[in-house]
Length: 283
Image (cartoon, rainbow, N blue to C red):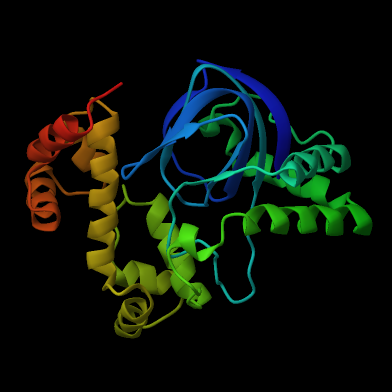
């Protein structure tokens, strides 16, 4: 979809970014950070980073950052996503071939920079996705195949067992995977088993059993878990009031949010914030 070499400054500072596509960065110079509710990775020269699709994160440049980046959608006929069971942020030491691959992507995919704004809330619009899809249609067979090959090489750098923490991928039915992705970007909305099942044309009870089989949780338990993960992220990265966080994460009210938070984490929202600040003081 996009590939470019950019020089960023302290204006590149965005919180709670979640996108339906993968991002890979190579840092040529400077420094910054990517973080989510579980960890923070320094953006260091000579390293590669991946943010899988539907992974909530913060992006920050402290002063300046020379960054190659590529953004691309993942399509699979069976709905099996490489990172579907481990949507986190990852970092590896770059090799010479990685730099050459970025330069080659730029050479065979001209005009793929983000020219409007580097704010994801501005450039992540369906109308812009369609523009990039039109550019894809203009590629000849050689350019298309070479681009796909390079992307496969880049993704492969993050698929070793020591990075993903597992030795093999579980094949997830496309209807369950699509529901997981829908949940990830719609946590702030009312979600029910019936609504999710209706979206994929399945019986609610059958959908719930299938969801349990491939995720280990019933749909509502999974939704609450993801809502609390999102809430944890907001608690430690923003100054939002707890009532605002409850609304942003789809809870009916503050009391419902607080009860669910304590049930899942064993501490209250305020207790979690105090514990995290004490254990991981700010820079």
